[in-house]
Amino acid sequence: MDCQFCLTALLGVKRNLTAGEIVGQVCAVLKDQKVSPPEDRINLVFMGMGEPFLNYENFVKAARLLVEGVGIAERRMTVSTAGIVPRIRDFGGETIRPKLAISLNASNDALRTQLMPVNKKWTLEMLMAAAREFPLRTREWITFEYVLLGGANDMPENAREVAELLRGLRCKVNLIALNPGPGIDFTTPDAERVAAFQKILREAGIPAFVRRPRGRDIYAACGQLKRTVEVATSPELQIQSISLSPTPEV
Image (cartoon, rainbow, N blue to C red; front, side, top):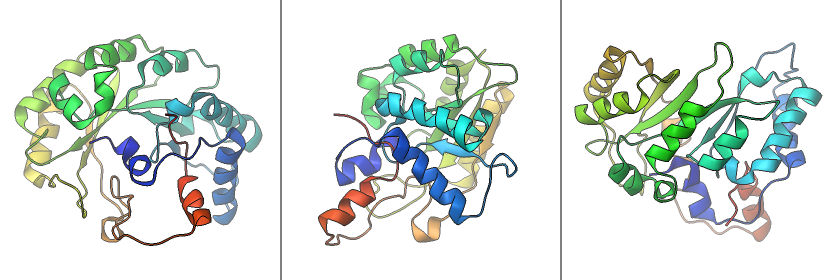
């Protein structure tokens, strides 16, 4: 399962957002919430519907505009990628650079290819090489996101494989128990399995945190951003629903 691409696959790719559209969305939310950076501190994440690194130029330009024009500190921004290795390398050389998060979700190539087709092109070996070469700044860490799927990638041997993959990296792991919903073929792991996975990583010296789910009851939690019923919408509404965050090129 690749959470980065779930909505794109569901709704279809229309086009990528421009840098101005990305910044405009952020500014609209800031205005609606009456928040004024840099006086008010916020955390901003580029992720969700689509892969930011497949709209790389617009994403980088938007990040620069948000820092220089809106006043959001780059350390308060994070970009999450499913593992577009060439763009990870490019990203390391940017002057203005949000923090990096990588969706891992599997502990070996066979499993990751099954869950995330992007692994067919950029394997775990290639991904981890790019992560190890990434030029981290002082007190900066790479975040690895790992969605735990009951009986699929949440076993002790998976945790030990993840620990070996990340050994020696300045990183932390966010563990996310799958949020259930209609049409999802996997199950949510028991809390005991989540805790056991976390314990193995921590005993290996890797900071691991369990993300608390928010919005499960309205299908708004991580991985649940999808339609639960088939509804008829106008073309205009379909385009608006696409334009929530950068979408990948095809």
